[in-house]
Length: 291
Image 1 (cartoon, rainbow, N blue to C red):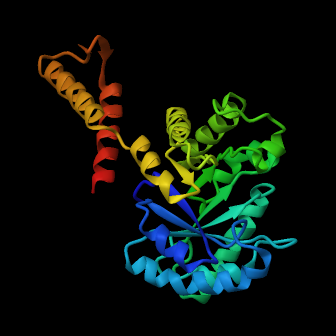
Image 2 (image 1 turned 60 degrees about the vertical axis):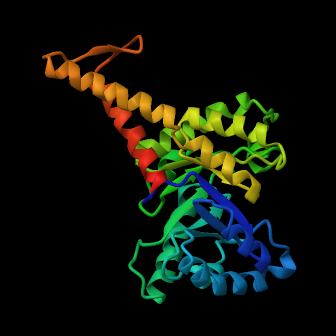
């Protein structure tokens, strides 16, 4: 699957917002049936999202949907409505642990079967918002259908309440949790996803927070508003200077190897084959985003 820098939440009860979100430049949209939809509009939102999905996919959008949770399970009617050809996956909120994620995976499998889709073709991304799910993040990341896990730390939201930390813009209080999510996701070969910056108009703060998440190893961010997308995409895209630096590193090592050496000094650093592998990964990522 092509990497995703920006997942943009779009309220599922407003067609105008769905259309606006489609033009925001996000790598993927999360059509939201959960927290951004008032209870009285849940049914209408489900119907609207189900109707809009084929149109958005035909326009080249990558589509995910966040479904509701009922008293005991995730909303099966939501899942049955939105599991359609071309939908990349489902977001679920507040899993208690791996058992909830397994349950959601089975429900998606049932929806795939009813829609005549290949079993396992629709991905699943849990938002880790309970302390237990964060403690068991590796066990969750290992579940086959899971394609990523979210370690988001919005101010005064579910994660902060679960862990009882005091939020700061610098994020020191959540660094350990985010690093656990990164390690679990990378160990399982899945995407670690960061965010969320709630101060919508503070793009400077967003840039700092996103850069910190990228520094920790996140692969992308959740976005709450279209105006945040450009900042997030820019943060997670290797710059032209970075690409030139790493290409120079590869060239320097290849020149050294041609002379029978396995390492070389480059820009004041000792480099060898491990560094060149990292350089190639970064250049390949830049090409993916440019495609």
